Image (cartoon, rainbow, N blue to C red; front, top):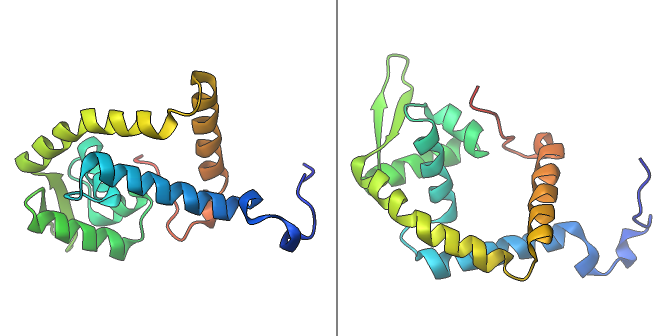
Length: 158
């Protein structure tokens, strides 16, 4: 596959560099998350809680794999969520911790769903329906083809 990028990336305008644009997109997404969702939950905490919603009872290592986090970050976030009463962590036989949303965590997450839909609308509003689908498809593809380059590659629930 041939590349359309010039060999001399130093002369490429910063606004044509994927890494810079991805960083800016992340800044925007986090800003909109906090504007719409508030500051009670961070975007990463939300991702962890959604992961536990879809995979209740997993351990911290699986949580890290499924949420695309390193294990120490996953453990730290789990401890913070437990301290807030939003998840439970039960020590298993081999020292692993089984993680589940608490009733308060389930309630919090359920209350966030309508606001998350609003956030999605805000982020994608400048794109028509076809562009939105294309943008999300390209983001998914980018993340998939570069997964192994991550310091915390995403691993499926299987």
